[in-house]
Image (tube, rainbow, N blue to C red; front, top):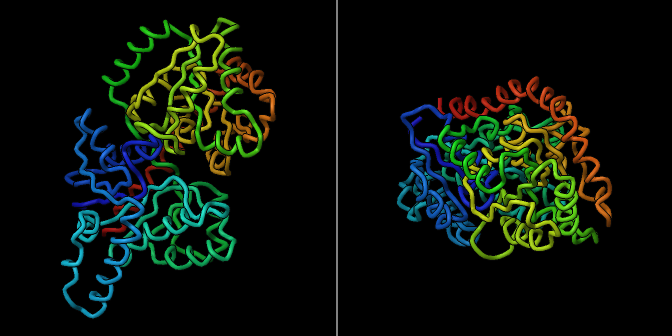
Length: 408
C-alpha cells in the first residue's frame, strides 16, 4: 500500500492514541506514507518537531468535520454516483488526503458507546462516514465499542458500521455488543499499542533522567486520568485527594519512590485530553512532595512507556498506560471506568489488579493496600504478563494484516 490515512487519533494530547499511531509507523512495511487526520493538528506538529518521525498531519477539527468536510463529502458522493468528476470537491487538505488514500485506518480508542454525549456519537459517525462517502476502504482498528442499545446509537451505528471494510473488536465484550447489531464484517484483534517500539536511545535518556530526579529506584509510577477524575467528581469521590494520599502513604514507607506522570497532555486548559492540570493539583496536595518525583512534561508516547517500563509497578486510570505496563512487564493496578480495561486484563489472568472508580469511595477504599499487594507480588504478576504477552502482541498484528487485505 502506498498511502494510509489515519483518523480518530492525534499525536499530541492523549498519548494512548499517539501510541497506536506510532505503532502503525513502526510496523507498517514500506515504502508507504502515513498521513494523520487530526483534531489537534497544530499541537501534533509542535510535538513532532521534537522528533525525526516522518508523519504528515492535516486538520479535521469537529467543527470542520461537521460544517465543511461532511457536506462536501456528500456532494462528492453524489457526483461519484452520477459517474461525474468528484475529487475537485475535496479542496480541504483532510478530504484531499482521504480521497487519495489506499486505506483509511480509524484508530479511535473507543466509539459508539451508550451513555456518551450525543455530540460524541455524532462525531463517531461522521468520522468514518466521510471516507465511506469518498469510496475509500475503512478499517476500524482494534478499539472498544458498545453497548449500542439506545435508539440513537443503534441508528447511527447502523448507518455506517456495516459499510466499513473491517471492524476489529478489541475483546470479547466488544465483539458481543457488535454481534448484537448483526454485523458480519468483524475480525477480532488486540490493541495496536501492544506493538509500539521504544528506541534504545529513548530508554537510555529516560533512565538517565529517572536516576537524576528519582534516584536509583525502585519506582512506583502513577498515571491519573482526568476522565476518571470527572466521573469521581460526579459521584462525590475525591479522586485528586485519594491519589495524593496514596503517594504520600507510599513515600512514608520509604521503600519505593512515587513517580507522577501525565499520559495525556495539552498546553493549557482543562479537558479530558489533558491530565497535566490534574497532576499539578495532585502534586500540590502532597504532604511528602520532597519524596515524590513529578514529570511536569508533555512527554512522547515512547518516553512514557520507557518510564513505565522502569517502574516496579504502575497505578493508573489511563487505558494505554496500562497497555504500556503490560507490554513492559510492569505490574499494574488499574482504576477504570468502562469494560475496556477488563477486556485486556482478563486474558492475562489479571482481573484481580483492576477496580472501578466507584470502589474508591470517599476515603480511597483499600487502594493503598492493593498497591502494596501489587508491589509485593511483583514477580508473580510479571510472570503472568510474560506468559500471555506474546499472544496479545500476535493479536495486535492482526490490525496490520487487515489493513493490507483492505487494499488487496
